[in-house]
Length: 177
Image (tube, rainbow, N blue to C red; front, side, top):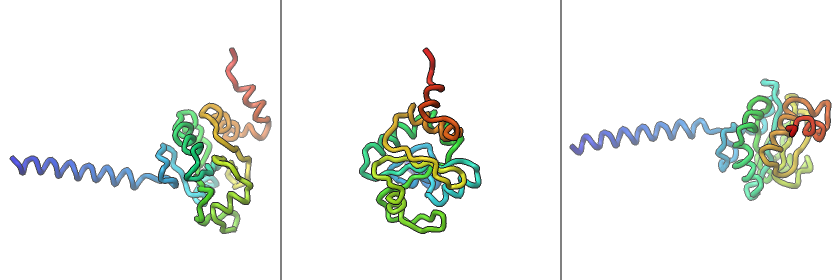
């Protein structure tokens, strides 16, 4: 009888191990504390993927101590509409504003912290937007709730930023009573 129980226990442990390995080997999160359905890419990889997929780049600039950054991760980057817009129009990148990790951009090697500083980012979270050719579109500073952030993503992702102001876009796309 004991051998019978050990076989089931051993099978269960093997199966549990397989699932754990599969889960952790497919996790691509740059920020270990971020467990979201978004695939977060390193900066260099994200820029290359955007060019090859003809998508824009969203760069989430965060710090480990930033409570609003954590709120973006838990409340905004898990929102269904936000996820859909990210999937359709963007390659997502996480960048730690205090990291010494080196990234390469336009032939220059610089730390993530220096890159962020050179862009004048001083508050977190800040979201940077680039087109598929690595041209800077705009920065969005601070926390935004899911509805407002979805508006920002649609405005940039669908190229409305090229023809109308954000205020005009929001006014023309808000529900009518």
